[in-house]
Length: 198
Image (cartoon, rainbow, N blue to C red; front, top):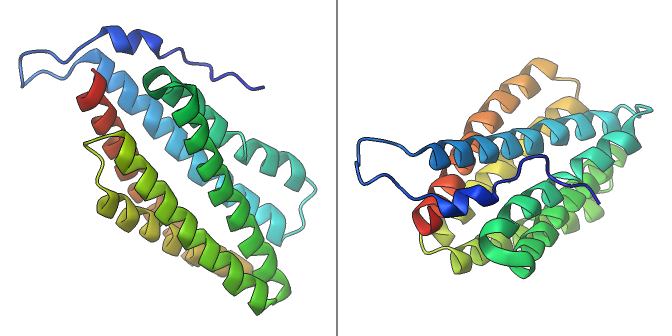
């Protein structure tokens, strides 16, 4: 099993500075870790989409690397929430990625029935993730997470469609927007954990 390279357990021993104008090192480090994980999430998603659509020989390796992302999140969240909660998030996030691959494959072969079914399950999974996050952290709003995840799905679908139709410039514009939004999710995730634990 892949072990996340950053040991974040020390963050639990740190607390916010009493000075509200000063940001603690623990919070900055946590924010950087979350931003890196979300960046990896969207980058490897894009690479997997391209590899699937273009039948690249690296598709299995790229997909395997993408599917490591939920476990990387799990290994960080474990320090704060324990094994059971971290594992549950990992399972939900892995489903998010697996369903995304199903959507790309169905779109590629023009199977609209499979595409509609997978997309329905993709949004249901987003609902599950939003609900789950809101139960483990009082600073995470279910509605906010649902809105952000729906935006993420919509933009990722647009990115995949533009790659599929060889509209590469538009897919790059999509990715730029996906990145901005992913960093927003990373910041909200880090802020919630910091407020709850640090």
